[in-house]
Length: 206
Ligand code: GRF
Image 1: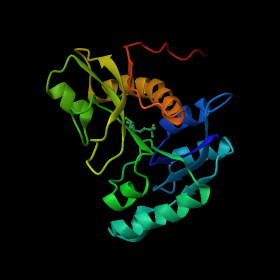
Image 2: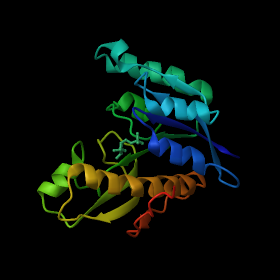
Image 3: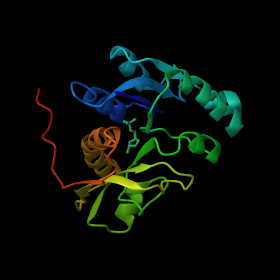
């Protein structure tokens, strides 16, 4: 039975694009919804261009009432009957109300080698610590922020001239390798973690 995947975004949606574009052929899942909390998120048009239903629940309409915002998210999500939710650059913290509803079927990608650097500014923190490597992690979402079981990690070298932006760009390339690989395995019912070796992605031709 093909799994239905809802993807939550807040921005450009590069991870959403790689996930959506990976769900073809004999892939056990297909995208059923792209949902953003930001009305002008660039990822929304990319979803529509791919024929994926796209919707917005603007968190600003709920003025800090997290429960009302999350109930609105649920109302937007559930008609699409997803089997899996992928948080992909979704920048709102979710409460146990929402997390419990989708327990066991919600994934997130975080731009650090968890459990290191939970929360924000991960690349600046890795550089400040003088780490020799950085990377990204896909994990199941639990009530602990960035704390659920790890389903995959990809590593990148940190270079002497790196800035948070240059490191973020190197990590993002690996996010685009890791998340689709983890989703495919997760959608097939396999929770065995995936650890990707460092592989610099060739610059896009043309
Ligand atoms: C990226 O920095 C990524 O590390 C994190 O969310 C940010 C935006 O990603 N997961 P995207 O391009 O919107 O997928």
